[in-house]
Image (tube, rainbow, N blue to C red; front, side, top):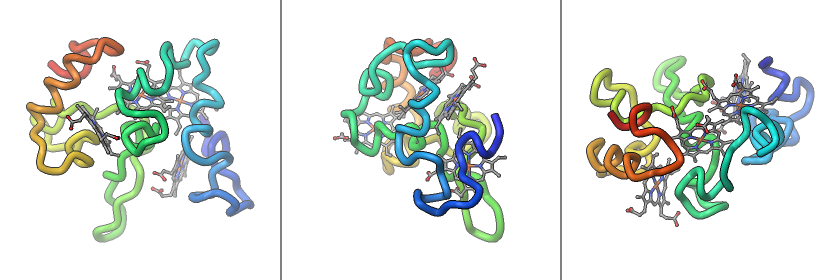
Length: 125
Ligand code: HEC
Ligand code: HEC
Ligand code: HEC
Ligand code: HEC
């Protein structure tokens, strides 16, 4: 993966100079027929209604937690989902409770444990 797989070098047509905007950027590669593709529909994968903020790929895979200059935070570019377990262990902010302000890590972990699309061993234990 190179920066220009997602970003356009000379055009500001989309926010952050992206080649495509919204989920279309990610779904261009993560199609069902691709080994790295989603095995389910977007709503089944995200467990949030399609088209809603909780169903945007970047909401869970690129939260704005990378600190740069001063208090400016930019999107994480590791794309890995950050489990609330990592918040408990290392204090890294997770996307669930960053968006669901006021909810606990415990709440997010028990919701994640009920998701059949992912292994609880990877995300909630
Ligand atoms: C140019 C094609 C391409 C685009 C665009 C793309 N991906 Fe990927 N993505 C890949 C490939 C290839 C892999 C590696 C698959 C593997 O090694 O199994 C990958 C892996 C991943 C993984 C798994 C990472 C891991 O460590 O297991 C996640 C999550 C992911 N991408 C999310 C996203 C998100 C979110 C976007 C949109 C912001 C996105 N991808 C856009 C091609 C792409
Ligand atoms: C509400 C949160 C959430 C949203 C939104 C979300 N994902 Fe995920 N995604 C997860 C979780 C949780 C995992 C499992 C992580 C793990 O097992 O380490 C995951 C795993 C993945 C993986 C790794 C392979 C797999 O299926 O386990 C890919 C690729 C991926 N997501 C792509 C996407 C794309 C593309 C979008 C947008 C269409 C998206 N995700 C939106 C939570 C989300
Ligand atoms: C898989 C797709 C993908 C790749 C590869 C990628 N980016 Fe991004 N980048 C994004 C997305 C999506 C956003 C916008 C995130 C948002 O709006 O929440 C973004 C945003 C940014 C921003 C704006 C600041 C921000 O946080 O929104 C900068 C700067 C940036 N990327 C630099 C880079 C650089 C440098 C590379 C290569 C080292 C790179 N990106 C590779 C998808 C990608
Ligand atoms: C970008 C913001 C955002 C992120 C990130 C997000 N959610 Fe949500 N979530 C929402 C919104 C908004 C709703 C309300 C339903 C809707 O979208 O119409 C919701 C609804 C829910 C609900 C059902 C209603 C409730 O409050 O009980 C659960 C459960 C939930 N989210 C769990 C999670 C978990 C677990 C994660 C992390 C994997 C997560 N959410 C990540 C925004 C988000």
